[in-house]
Structure formats: structure tokens, C-alpha cells
Image 1: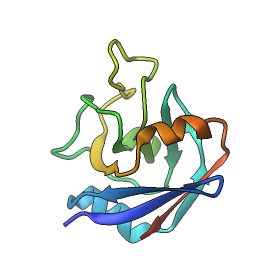
Image 2: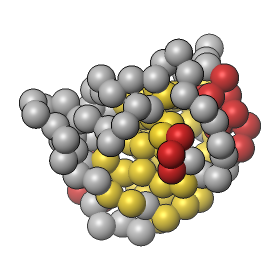
Image 3: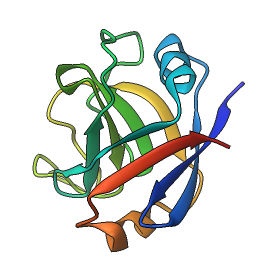
Length: 124
């Protein structure tokens, strides 16, 4: 069963959920996580200091609102629009990510938060 989480950036709370996968469970167990935000187009990514290999959800086929885990950066990636590798409207990660969750709230909220420095993820 998906686990409800909240993403907090500049005092805005965005509702999301983590799926029932081993990777997502490890992330959920590590919450709360606070980190510095990096931006890559309309993607926020941030190191969480947990090393997890690619799994059977690994893909570069991403939709707006997806939350992925990116093993090379030990990072969570939140996709809310085009990235530098996008050809169409869908985000394209730098390399494969494990799909660990999705945003429940409208992903476009994150566009207004570009330039933010910190992100916090908590259990709901």
C-alpha cells in the first residue's frame, strides 16, 4: 500500500506518495530527510545519502509528477516538467531511475518554487 508523504519547500507542503517497492520502503524508513535542492530543467534532485541499486522499476520513461531514485547521485528526483534531455513534453532523466512514487498535488506548484535552496520530506 502506498505511503503518504509531504514535501516541504519554502513553507509550502506538497502531498505525494511512495509506492510499495523495496527502494521506496528504504526511503520511507529514512524519513524525515532534509537536503539541498539541485535543479535540472524542471526536475528537483537532492542527495539522501542512501545507496540503492537500480531495480525492476528502473526506466528513463518518466511522466510529470513521478518521483524517482537516481543511484549515481544517491538522490531523489522529482519531475515536474521538461528536463534538458526532453524531446516532447515528458521529462527525461540523465540516466535510469527507480520509480518510487508520485506527486498527489499538481506538479506545476513546483515551478513556482524554482530557486529554493532546501527541501524536506516527511511522513504524512
